[in-house]
Length: 146
Ligand SMILES: Nc1ncnc2c1ncn2[C@@H]1O[C@H](COP(=O)(O)OP(=O)(O)OP(=O)(O)O)[C@@H](O)[C@H]1O
Ligand SMILES: [Mg+2]
Image (cartoon, rainbow, N blue to C red; front, top):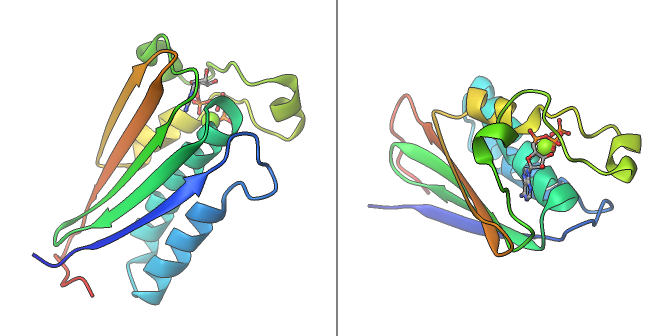
């Protein structure tokens, strides 16, 4: 089955380039004339996941994969990890630094928004080693990928 795969590096604490992977993905999907509502859902999830790596994580990678009937965004970073994932998923829970809060982050709404906007979300973390967030979006009309 034809598929499209791309990956983007994400650098921890690099606020200059933060968000660029999500902008690339959004432009790519627009150029493929995808449904704007679906593009928005994907963009929200990739942006929130990317910013979590920049703010909380270690250096990481975002893998985009488009298959016939689904798009998958997998974000892996080698930062401190998440001790209690169900607590981290609660709206309003945040350990954002003062620096991140001054830039407007730290509402504790990133993970809840990712859960709301993806058809499926899996978060795994080995504290001190890595965190992996994988989000799946089902395409309403299966596409032939380029
Ligand atoms: N990649 C990550 N590495 C380590 N901790 C993380 C990571 N992603 C999320 N977390 C933890 O989960 C918490 C909740 O994340 P969430 O995205 O919901 O909120 P936030 O990033 O703190 O604030 P907001 O996203 O609203 O700006 C974070 O404060 C942090 O403690
Ligand atoms: Mg966040």
